[in-house]
Image (cartoon, rainbow, N blue to C red; front, side, top):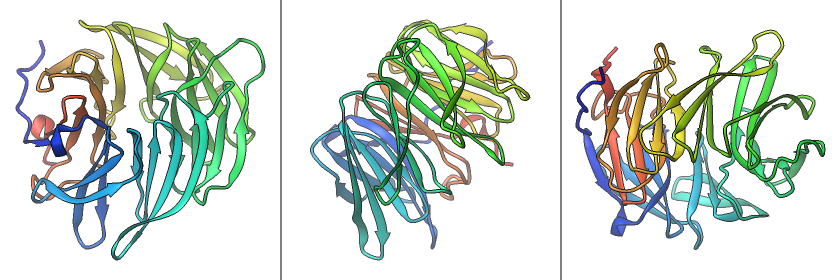
Length: 321
């Protein structure tokens, strides 16, 4: 039986209730803990997690910020329409260092290998372009002509082992491909239920999740020896449409953010829903987990944001270990 839903530990109202498209936690030297919200109006708002108030406003452009990522020293943003910016963190704020322009109209989010400072970005004609953080193009993943894939819809960088760096890519025509980044070759293909909107994979679990426009979340695996993609099972949800799936780092739970505004938490062990969080009034656009404890709550925090302009912060199941 599903648990009674907990309350969020805090609800942040985004500036002017602007819809939130993307979220990222940032833990900087000196104890500065922030949550960055990429917004519909082209701004990134940095909320201080001690006060939960806006500490900094970064105007990136005019278009919605579909995705953002924060490393130890950089902020990377993706605007709708295909413009990517890399900002270096300085003593006074963020300084724009590189711009990548790709004429790509879709909603597919980039992913990155932060150690190698490499970006994987969706491109037209089923391609995925590879750039360095300094903005130089260094490669391209280009599928063969069969089957017709359509545009990339979701990407996930994974390290299957210390020397096996791969990229999962979901495409418009309903295919999931596993790319070997060492050779730029596709090593496995899986036909999914329909156009995948979001994909995540947990290496220790050896299982992944696909969210799409239907009422089914798909679970798949990657073979340890042959690296083959395989469909495992389907999970049916009450209302169709998932914008984001995300596994927690510990591999105990994963989450889906729905068009109905509901955040569903599932057990990786049983694949059953543990709880449904119904705090949001419009579609969830992004969900992320903090990589370390947020000191104010002494807990790892999950953040969710959506079209209602709210950002909810959750301390789920009170794991204080």
